[in-house]
Amino acid sequence: MYSKTNLTLATSLIMTMFLSGCANTAADYEPIVDGPKDALFYDDLADCKKLAEQREYLNDDTKSEALLGAGIGAVIGAIGGDTGDIVGGALVGGAVSAGGRAWDTRDERKNIVLECMAGRGHRVVG
Image (cartoon, rainbow, N blue to C red; front, side, top):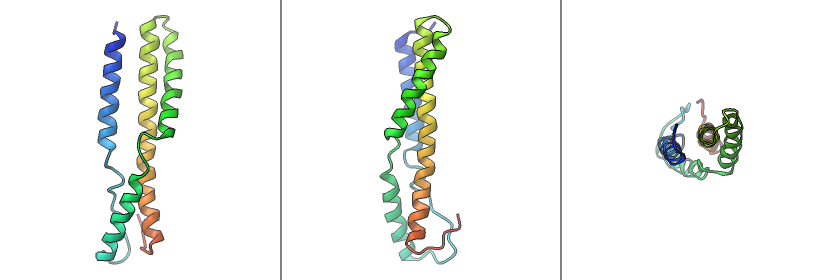
């Protein structure tokens, strides 16, 4: 059986690795455009990347989903009847849910870059 401290530490490490791996992704996306990639393109791209970075990974949506996942995980853990199972289920459920939402945020950042570039007149194709 795992102790509460070990489970907390393991979950924290997993979430830190996951979120740090995503930290600069998607906002660094360079879209495919039908047109020139001149100085204006790169100036606009830099501005759009900065805009996309404003959508943080640890946002209210991520926190809400982590809480929901923790609740569901705790309920599933309670089936085992052991306090360690409840805590472990809550930690794993919270981590999985937060990780999934962070992945969605990655896609949102990419879409912000795409829409921003299109809004600035670049013919974005992907």
